[in-house]
Image (cartoon, rainbow, N blue to C red):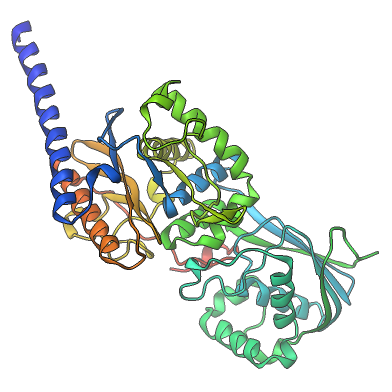
Length: 445
């Protein structure tokens, strides 16, 4: 083939790519107009072959729950995917003390397991139950809709919950929950954990529950641990169901605020240059390029004023790319940490679930009173595409929220089509989430 033909083919390829990007930009304008959304006020961008596309790629955007994969990235960078939270339990037979590790899923299952283990040791009455600052309790964390809970950790909340559960003998509500736990948990799991499947074997009462910065026991005879599944299992569940509590405890546990601010600021400047301050839109002069106030993406308050996690679409898609690179170092992929649309449980279970695209969309949703977002990765026949949508809306359940969701879904499907159609993963939904470490023989299907 002569040089003239090679140049012609090269120029044709450039022209085709340019046409695709122009068509995508026009489609964004068209859909935004059709659904009453000003395209200039909403962030949209995608990363393809190392290039960022989208006229609002550098617009300041509220993140909502698309923050959770960033929290996941910080956790992976500081601990690795195989880290396991462990809560140490020490007892002298009349008193117990919990030494935690910021396990974000210290829920009812773990509490009943703890009571069962103590009962197996012959401990049914306590004078004192104490815990440290690294033992956040959220007993009903796996109950329906609790993933969206805006509960915040407090010592008082811990005490209230532990008093309820550890006075099992006189609390009819907790007795009912124990019966449900034993009924719904397969016997092979209970056997694997070494606790009884018979309700009548469970007895517990305690006189006092309190917080302690030091171990209050002078001496102790019993010592065992409550071990969580691997961190990667936690993060997959967190992102699939958009679990706010788990993400915020993860954020607290691994110092994501200090690490995240530094990481995101450097990522922005490495990706877009030291002059990014001049490219970005909607920022105050001295504002950082990105800031995570919470690990979940829930808004919070500073001096009684609302603050939200923010960044630009461009920063987010680059961060999600970094998340994939971090996972690749451990032989994992984005599907191990982000929900796969139409396949996994959670917020994307019934969204973007057209059969032709199943297994090709890995993404995280985000919804707040004033935000509707979606970000992730698409697998297409022309290559992988990282993408993001950040709609600024003003009513939690109004037409703007609904219309923003429609635009996001239509644009996501359009991106896949424009790049040659889906190239799906061979993917199987992971085993059912259980917050205690199990042997492989009894993992839930």
